[in-house]
Image (tube, rainbow, N blue to C red; front, top):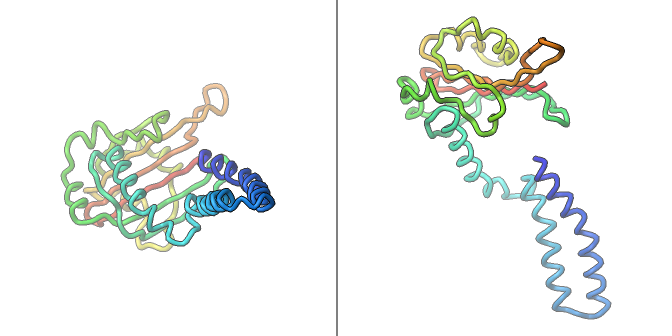
Length: 218
């Protein structure tokens, strides 16, 4: 995100410079230079729209990139390459400038993925999640439900009520046959007072064919 903002700022700074060069080319009646600079200006005007996905058609181009990134992330998360499909529930608070806020997404998984997670390999429980994105966070490997009460502090920090659905997160964690894992960062608020400050919490439900992703940063 920071890199994207920086690139957009550079493009904005370039507009008056390109405008000045266009005016100078007009004064000198240098058509070749005028056409070249005008072309560059048009490209520079379109690039932010593509990067910020506000240009019509940009999602069509970004779609395959997003799907591949999601598959790669899911390999780090579970050891199995897959994409979620339909979004069935979403709730997000407004994020602060530093990313603080809360988000939860519940998406469907396909039959092949659901069948795999009915009997995942042993590495699923011992080597994952292991995401590059959270390399400086601690990780709690995937566990079978029912929920282990020693993880209650982490679940409480990730918890949200699912007002629009006919189940709650607690139901998913008590159902047999599901799995949960989390990555977290502890804040030291005072000497020896460690509390959960950031968390990514995940639940996979093969029978329901859904996956839950939660992020809470403070």
